[in-house]
Length: 290
Image 1 (cartoon, rainbow, N blue to C red):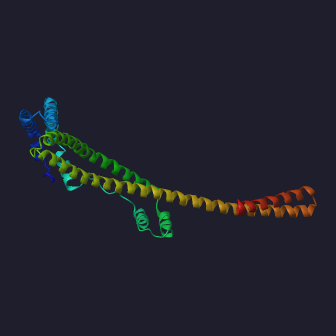
Image 2 (tube, rainbow, N blue to C red; image 1 turned 180 degrees about the horizontal axis):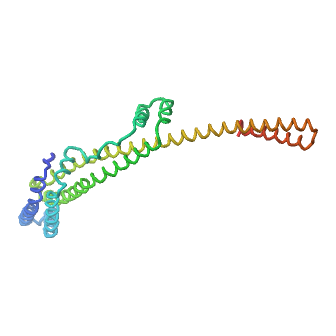
């Protein structure tokens, strides 16, 4: 009783077909037990009350059983049934489609990042990657995630539906078996346990596939960040060189202003030269300390 039944579409159909009959057998056994139950002791009274309570809900259980039976039989006939159950039993999931096409330079960068090479090497490889290649790879990775979600969705829905129906079936059988201390009709419960085990294997495989797809997306986003940082560093270096150029031009103007001031001995030119000196000094202060 502790093991798992062999899970197959045929086993699910067989268990579903046998469910109303199994519940009928439990009802018959309950009526027999009720007739034999003595009401002289407290234990006997409690036993008789439990049997009466169980039999009072026979019609409701039968309705639930027929609903579960119809749902399971329909599920086994679904177009996705064989593929979904096979994937669950093998611990596999739907295919995500073809690998994302990437430029050679991008592949080299991703390999260096994956191997945790020193930052100098990925930085040099980042400079060789084109933004258009990163955008194309990122779009391909997003499409692959969407394709996987669309391919896995029918499997997920079928497995969830069947698990819910088998759980209801097992609960109906368990109630009668525990009340009557019977070993009969335990197959539905073991089938449910076997299906849950297959569903857990499938879920683990699905999570693993999703993690790999998301990792590819995250890595490509990191490449975008590296490219943005590289462009920012380049702009910073260029602005620094512009600063030096403008500072040199300003110094040249100051020297020329001093020359004119000395030649003409003009107070205005002298003030202009002093203002230029202050501007150069302020520029150096900003560069060194701000």
